[in-house]
Length: 110
Length: 114
Image (cartoon, rainbow over all chains, first blue to last red; front, side, top):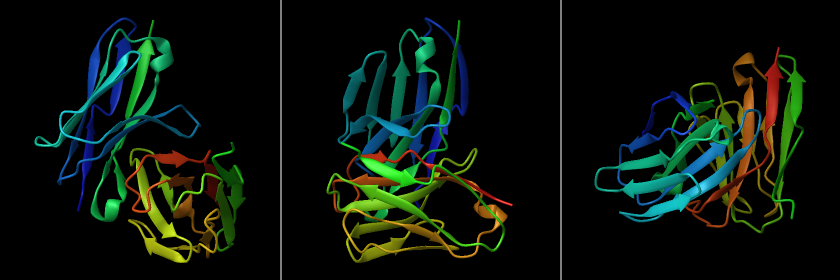
């Protein structure tokens, strides 16, 4: 059974600081997705990582994938308040069904 | 382009009542799925469909039924609502028939069972 773990579950950080969210998964997969969810809203796709070593960047967010270590990271550079949200990673497992991590709630403070 | 549309946005049910959550997409996606989101548990797959006439169970299917008569629509039926089904429900669709592609989500239905 595919398990996806994220850490930390909650992250409070100051504006301007850097931090990394980690996503570990338990079985082989070559597709990993990052989503953002604002409170009371739906999920918005951020990144699609399709191969080992894939790196994608959008603004202050950068995601990478290491399929050998079964690890993806979401790096936040010089955080701003607008990045406050919950971030989910999701991995394609058996029969290509998506399995989600429990999410990381990010709070960026002034 | 509407994307994935869910109705209703909010619903309160009494224990034992039944209801249908509607989901429609206009992107001609083959793959559609239903998730429930509970605090601290991420999203869990209820049922999914890889095309019209084909459905299968996900991780937490008990108490829910689905059907897929058209490519566009994928309704979720609660047969006899229980307080444990209080949750936020999301419908999603993906261009890939296998579900391996990027998923697009509806706005969610917040369901309370009293």
